[in-house]
Length: 365
Ligand code: SF4
Image 1 (cartoon, protein in one colour):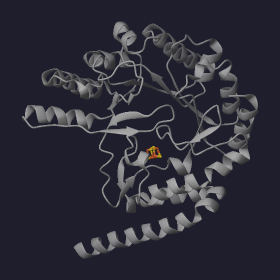
Image 2 (tube, protein in one colour; image 1 turned 60 degrees about the horizontal axis):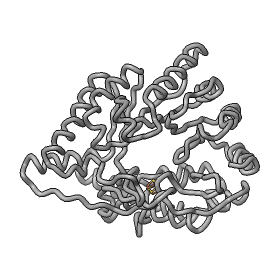
Image 3 (cartoon, helix red, strand yellow; image 1 turned 30 degrees about the vertical axis):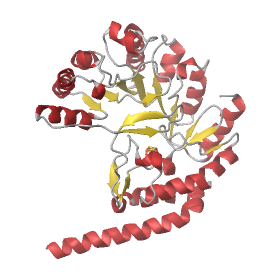
């Protein structure tokens, strides 16, 4: 990102009291020369910093001390097994991951600070399933208390297809892999590690179907993303009437790439607009595309296709979803101006939902 764009962004952050900034995500933060200067400058302004990094390169002292000022760091690592890790992430060496992680912990100890929350986050392929139990132990040995696995997203041009655990073709091989996941949950509970696995409900459903001799089939949905169209397994196409996604991101956050493209979240690929200045950014956030996205989420009517198939935000009744956007809007004057008509409707619908619930409660007493 060039200096001019960066200083406009920093001005936007200051003017709007932005509380939290995530650095990197699709691109690797540590490949940007001198990235720690920008991070330090934001931290000096009291901004909370988060990031995702793949730990491919050993961190310098400057990088370690900048990372120590983050609140959350997501380290992309799928397994502790060096050979399997090379298989799934060619440029990643577990020794570098552990070195960086321990250098950060040592720095925080020396500085007498608690340092960032660190999550180890991987992608659940059939390659890593046999190493899951060991990986959870390895995470515990490194004082990592949260481990998360995403599902594989298939994109055109991906070097390999069919590697998602759920896609193992042989039923008995699949059951073995599904059991390895369950064993990892058991070990995680014993060790006090918060383990989450995206798509675990599908893994359990297929395993149960195989054990009970039932037919099991999976739909895949084509989704956009900020980098490529991907196919994912999900139940997103079946959003029942009266439901929406419990997602406040279009009210509370935006994602910005070095070209100035603005995205509503990390998974939806539609570009909401392009901005090179603070004023352009404010105008994008209040534009028609954003208003329509907020309207669709707030009402659940004609839900945005990407939100309908979202793998991040859970389903929620429209009437239960209302209050949070209203609180967010009330704190941001520019949002109040741009979405006032929606806010009014949200308020009316929430009141109606509350009144119906109250009436039902009174009737049952
Ligand atoms: S795609 Fe998902 S995360 Fe993105 S705005 Fe829609 S519901 Fe929110």
